[in-house]
Amino acid sequence: MKLKAILATTVIATGFAATAALAETDWPQRTVNVIIGASPGGDTDFNARTMARYFEEITGTSMVITNMPGGGATIATSAVRQADPDGYTMLFGHTGHLIVAEVSGLADYGIADFEICCVPAIDQGAVFVASKSSGLTSVEDVQAAEPGSITFGTEFGGYSHLQGLIFQEETGAEMTIVDTGSASEKIASLLGGRIDLAGIAYGAVQDYVESGQMVVLGQPNEERNPLLGDIPTFKEQGVDFVMNNPYIIAFPEGTDQAIVDKMGEVMKQITENPQYAEDLEQGFKQPVAFLPQEEGVERLNEIRDTYMPYRDALQAAR
Image (cartoon, rainbow, N blue to C red; front, side, top):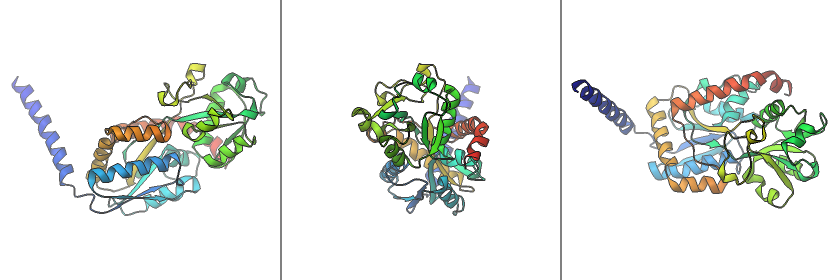
């Protein structure tokens, strides 16, 4: 009993010490610049701005969102990497920005070159959607199509390119993969019949699906995201295609661990707010998810290991 009491006291003391360390951190004292490698209006921008609103409520300090699209997000990630590690420049990105960019050769650095704070959210709102003119209504249609007859729209070297490569491998289909650009450009190409298939956020195409202009083939989640309605996973359809996209909060290498820890604590508090969950649902059909630093880094490294075998294929398209 004495040993148990000593251990319990030690655990409590350790917890108090960690809390005290966070409490003694005077960060943030001024506006935090959050850099994202995406244009305004998309899912990454939405998640960053939603986080910033709640961050200010909790800390009393504001965040300013700086959009730096282009270069497969390397403009944004380079800016954060080169910033002073004082806690006032932060990256809000996702695996496409910090893992796929490295795998594809767009960047010669990756997650190991930043102080990863946490995984603040996981995009589980992506679907594979076909244009009405394509005639595709199921995964079976894709698998039965003549090799090269299906045109898959993507952004070469980016996350959606990797989606197409993995989907192709898991289904056994042979698609013609073309560079159509951003999500809005994919939508225009689907509506115009210039491409047959694309991976895209359901929230961005829901109206077109409901009007019959597009057809959803499935969602690449381990289990159904109930916020997407009655859309089956690819696993349910016999295709082992699971690919969702964790978001990442990261600071420049060398940032004080106390600052990184405090940001993680603030983000955890944000995810526990019911209103935040409602905002994510209404915005991009996204359920709440959070992984603290250690679990987040482990998950990201697992994803990196999964994507590395596609390095040559991604780089060949550049």
